[in-house]
Length: 236
Image (cartoon, rainbow, N blue to C red; front, side, top):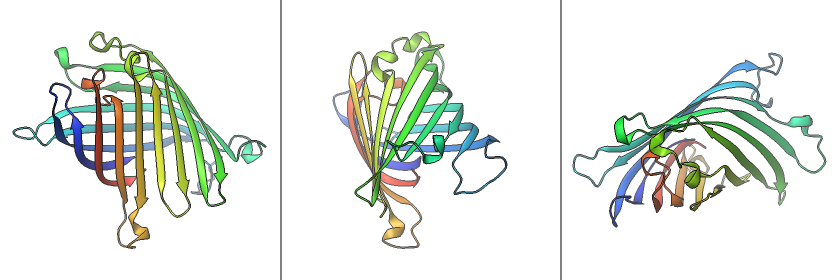
């Protein structure tokens, strides 16, 4: 996803809420295509990909409005959509993604945070109510090369991220993440709607996000808090 959103966030070092601008940019490139060169938007994605995600947190309440922290996530992964070519009887579609991801905040000294993952993410898709789709995507991740400054990151971010999404044919989408961990439970929900449904010239999604639990900025991974932000997304 690519988005820009603003709202109130629990500050990890004070008891007050602060105003943050949270933005994320993402892209991926299919380096190897398993579709035998048959490039089409209707073809399932099957290949080896390189990707990059950057999420930054802009502290608007503070003097001079500094960037509080940024997360950098380069990754490499295989994805194979429509396993069995949609012939599996108990599900409408099955996708499998597996790969490697680096995660750091690009800082040094005591503010430095980093880890690396191997992960597996199957996605099961069902049609619901004849006009919507339900996606179930548990992501199982194994941490390695964990930096000393964040040696206990798995106690807060867990080993499983259960993503459940519902998307209506008219555009509305609700995406939720439930993350059980040793020291906390995190819940994250994002509601998006394509604005072109209201006005054809608007080529973006309206977005509302709520999060309760461990911080998703690496600098505050072990602080409990909440946030609600509003903004717009270019992709989801």
